[in-house]
Length: 360
Ligand code: PEP
Ligand code: MN
Image 1 (tube, helix red, strand yellow):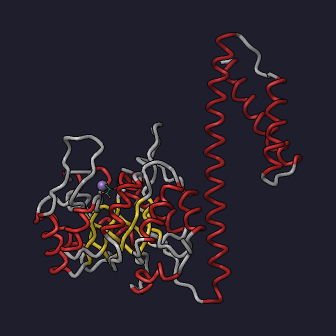
Image 2 (cartoon, helix red, strand yellow):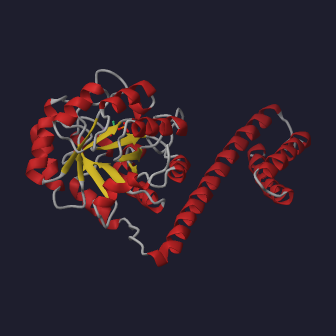
Image 3 (cartoon, protein in one colour):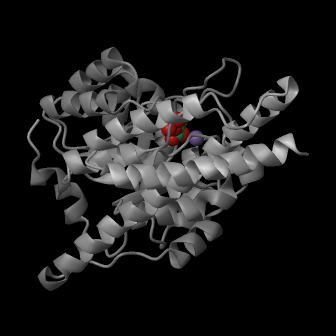
């Protein structure tokens, strides 16, 4: 797939002065709920009203969506508010029904993106459509799978494309519901700079009080828009209650976010610089995070050594690490001197941690 600027047409045609905003409930629950939320989102920065009609659930037995009847509610929300409408499609039948209902934006969910068969089936059903089609990242952190999905859609002659970053599932518990792994989205952005990139802070965080911070990070990383789950009564939502915000909170979040302005040609340099600096900041934060994790492992080693009364300093092991890291560093363009300095500092900190544990 060539990179092609026309991929941005749908977004550029909106001529927005803020990132594109897609908002609405995780799930359509009742007609009143859908219309109630849509009316509260009218006359805000929201451009597309979302609601899940068919809900992919990890375990059976949970609410699995109201089904096709919800499309009528979405249509009515569009007629009454003028908001364009968006929903998730997960198979050929969903696509046919959504197109029939004149849904403006269709997205493919994270659980579907993992399956090339499903993505292909959806791509075939959407062939040649001028609707906007957004592909969420796969649940697992696999850039190729995500890129493959984009290629399948593009080959199906779908020009109004975009992607949604909703974070990645992990076995370990973290503060996120799905860890952002921003570098994967950055890499995708580098491969396809013209492909609109939207962040879904709701599914990344799983918690409404983290939505603002994650949205700001996304905007700092030059994302083109946000998809935020919004509900008039979040606590009683039938799905994803903890992460939904009220329409009023969404308006406040949009007000508080520092939004990068459109730039003129002279400020091209500044824009590029800001983008690069945001990448640096992000990498620096990741390094601190990794170092913290390394020290925790070190603490565990300290406790283990203590239990067997073994000395902290193991010279042989340390020299092995150093030798390996110098070679590794060389392959990444890092000088031996630099790698030595860094690893001596890390080693010292590690020894301090273990000493503390052994002498407790
Ligand atoms: C959703 O947007 O409601 C949804 C099910 O998201 P995801 O596919 O990212 O889990
Ligand atoms: Mn949801």
